[in-house]
Amino acid sequence: MNTSVLRRLWTAPQIPAGIAHGDMPGDVICIGEEHIRKAETLFPPLKAMAADQIEKNPNGRAVVSVCGGSGVGKSEIASILAYYFGEMGVGAYTLSGDNYPRRIPMDNDAERLRVFRTGGLRGLVASGVYDLRMADALRALWAREADADMGVFAEYPWMEIYRKAGYGALMGYLGTKAEIDFDEVSAIIAQFKRGAQSLMLKRMGRERGALWYEPVDLSGVQVLVIEWTHGNSDLLEGVDIPVLLNSTPQETLAHRMARNRDGRIDSAFTTMVLEIEQRKLDSQAWRAGLILSKAGELMDYAAYRRAMADA
Image 1 (cartoon, one colour):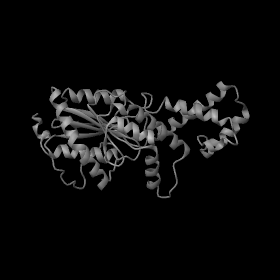
Image 2 (spheres, one colour; image 1 turned 135 degrees about the vertical axis):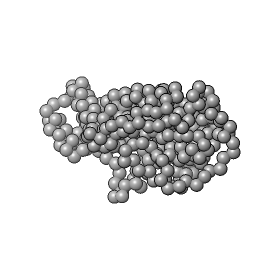
Image 3 (cartoon, rainbow, N blue to C red; image 1 turned 90 degrees about the horizontal axis):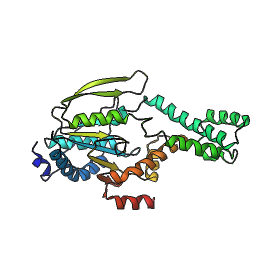
């Protein structure tokens, strides 16, 4: 395609209600002024970078990923960016990476907890301190969902061993090929860049049995936008322009507390999952083509490192 359109001066169009969004079943996006402002900041450099990639690809295609932690607005911002491409006459499709875990959400949540608890138990056994009294105490903690809470260390000092070992086991599961089918997403990217005119794409709901494939027409699509926490992972192949929506751990926690109607913070286990997610995003940040702060400012990797060090 002629990419000159992407190199022209650009004025942000109005965002109408009901624009197309990611293909996760039941996904509902709520676009606000903050999302629009951030997308307007990202799009000028992004469209120029996309033009470069489209020119390099024999089939005139580019792949953008929008990644980041919980609550940074991945779905909303990815949808707006895809809309902006479309308004410039460059077809775009938004793919949700959340269709590609190996287990449906309710089963994956259970698997995460199993991995943590099994790792914790194995840590106690390996340390030589495990006995049957611990088994009774752990059953009580499991029933209260308190076994990830560091507040139990005072009563049960050996829980520090359990939590550290469980944390390590969870690190080895979250965002890896054991949890996520990166190979399938990488294959989709490869087929798209080879010029596939249509693809059968996976759909995953939240309940058992909510799993199927749908044909998607890509004949007019030049830009594939992937919105996904793991969109910058080194296990994912073929992404041309990773866009990182950054949020410090404090900003993420503040967002989640504000979003909870009853004002309660996350469980200790959920907080642990988010901490590991943040650590993995941080380790991958150097790969990002664009980084946007929580405040909506573009930053290079050096500025990102300073911001995270300050946090």
